[in-house]
Length: 235
Length: 338
Image 1 (cartoon, each protein chain N blue to C red):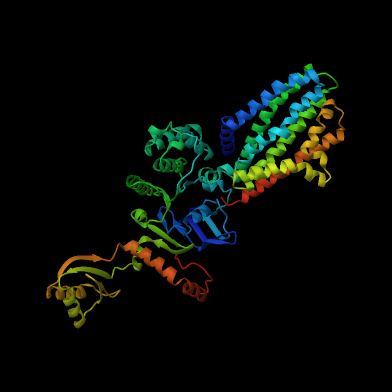
Image 2: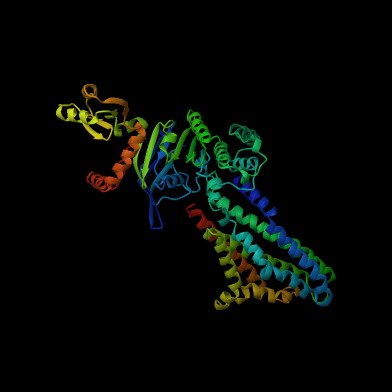
């Protein structure tokens, strides 16, 4: 019951948040304006890739701001009014993570699914159904990774600004870090660059699965760090 | 849960923040079931740290915390379900109304809808926030926020209440309301209430713990504190020929020690002796001179006096206390009685 109460409460605050409303409005507006033009001028895979690619590259900033403040913005309030009650640390942090994931994926899917359908229906050039599903899925997983990372930062730093800047810096430096580690294909930029090929179904299946598994594993790992750290943190 | 005589027991409870600051040092705290326990100490003495450790919001650096006979941990939900906590200067979600917040806290406590709703309405009425129930918390005054915190601490009908500086920031009316409420709730619940102002809570506590610079220097019944008081001292305020009184007192063989401070004559009697003969001697000397007796006072309020004496002794003899404890084979344990 405590988990459900925390999740409901946080989701309500997300839905009523101006940040979420502005993000959804801008993302929808950009898609509505740019997709028809792109579909008339370029192949469907390219047009959809341009819409989906805005999430890891542009809208990621909104996702970071919303997620990196999940815990740090409640410093003080969380101990006084929530964790002094019959609530475990795990219930709290998992509810926070779930709420931010639902919000970020909600904003993403509200734009991505209609855009994918319109592209499938009216797009030209090579485009595969499984490729569209894979494209939407991998960008979604990319946003899951970003949200998990940001929530983890919000447990590590008590100042929201530090958590936001840390997550933002790491996200946009990810390409360089992955290049050094020789796993460049996991970087957001690499994913966006290869999105047309994925949507066309031309991307190697083994690489698609590798990205899916790695995104899932890294998301699980950073979530584990958040849960373990917050579970032992002094409040 | 254990039905032990003590609701809260700590053993050598110590908290050190980042190897930089010792907030609590070997505290052996004992809160008997059904008592109103006052945790007293100056600002920065370690009261809030103690409370956060009791609630499992922080983990001890050393020592243990047992609540209802079980070890408190960050995830000991079944223990916290029996505790109502009022933080000092409480901060609540600002955009919620009191109804939404109490409903949320009720859900966190696992209360079903049919219990939660009537209880939150009754509590809002009891704390006088019924007329403000549609307002957002961000528009509340300090007193209103405290009253909401009191209601939130009672929503789960807890067996143990922990209130951290409940009178902080309140006007006299608010302070009286809170003290009266502690007195009323103390009839059915165990209450631990902290304050830096002994005057606020001495009227309602039957047990007391005194913290000074992270050290629990006293833990026991209020009546035990009287042995630290200056009950053997009386002050006489004089007017007129005070020098004449002094001269006669110097010449007389008195059953009392005395000292003069301008117009004040301070009589210090033996700890165990009867004060009447000595007092009569001095009054007779005053009557025999041109001096006038204006007032007679016993020195200060007993509990406040004991509190100050304990703090002064702790600060003055901290090192020798440690040596005494070590010689007694007790390591660095607290001399505070259990």
